[in-house]
Image (tube, each protein chain N blue to C red):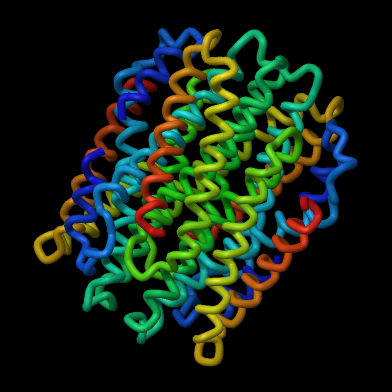
Length: 135
Length: 135
Length: 135
Length: 135
């Protein structure tokens, strides 16, 4: 998703105090994680043992919601409140960590949980790296 | 929005450890705040002095996004991770506080900012009250 | 949710060509339906026979997503493209119809499906009534 | 965003009646378009002539909302109602068309509008191609 970087590069505001590479990486990781989580919830619903996967489905849906909101909030780069951005990133990181742990429990049996757990870990890391630049 | 309470009352899980009244109040406050923020951003865009209201518009949009995500996450009542719910509620409370403060600055001149600030304050309080029950 | 009407009444644009009562009713119905659908999906996940409810869960999630988007788009009242609004309302009406029919199938056994079906029917009607004013 | 394809490939349902390549392309195009639209609205808010760009901002926000909802709905691949999917895709295509036309009007003056218009056109095409497979 190269558009994210191009949209930052064409933004009229002075963004010199922002680490654009880490910001773009975090936005993209949020979008990819949100999609993986929505898809993983749907895949879990198709498994014969869906009754054993209800926690995974709920965690997927929660993670998807917070990742989409975070991607949107991060995409509004100028003039935003740093303290608020930080709490959103913390919430997103926590959701990704929870969802990765839950999906990891089923990763050996269900490939979609393995792929989703990897997307969650990447997003968790991207949030942590962006948070480090805001400190 | 009485459906929120009715949906909680018809949920098959044992929710006896949850303060259902405060949960329903917080979900409804999030939805009302999200709508007010989306509408306030649109109203700001119609003001002659829109150039002075860009921070208000951005804050409105951020607050709306996090409020919708929070309403969804809170509506998944069973089996969710308490620590994750708490970080989302903290992020929502922070966004509502920021948005209320920004809208308050324009409340005397723009009635939509006054109504929106009130919705943000109610949501901020509802998040705080629900957080207190999770501690 | 009286704020929806108050936000329309305080909007600086001339909205005399819009049926504000039907617009506010449709926005509120979308938000209530979205919440009911998210909650119904979660309640279905807690039922012992969750394996028989996977279509209901998917339809709930789809309906919730389109209802939230419709509520947001309708809340941007000024200057929007009527043809685009109409296609969004048609999609929302179709999703509510599908979800109501699916939930109705389980309404006798699951009270949450009954409540959710009613919210979907109300939203479907509100979309139809608003569409009639745009024709 | 290669995860989208991988999530489809690991889905346990029989998806042989779905054109997976076109579906994955459409989901990715929706996510990229949603991000570009959110970012373009923010960039427009930073322009000196923001007062001339309010229609662009509103259209961006509408397009972003419907693109996110469409990406989510398309990511639930199994068992969904084809008629409902079609109305959502039609709404998304209409929103992308409207937003591309609006952004094109400012593309020479604002690079972010040019990039966003291209993302909208790609998404419009991806929706059209997927719709053709559903007919």
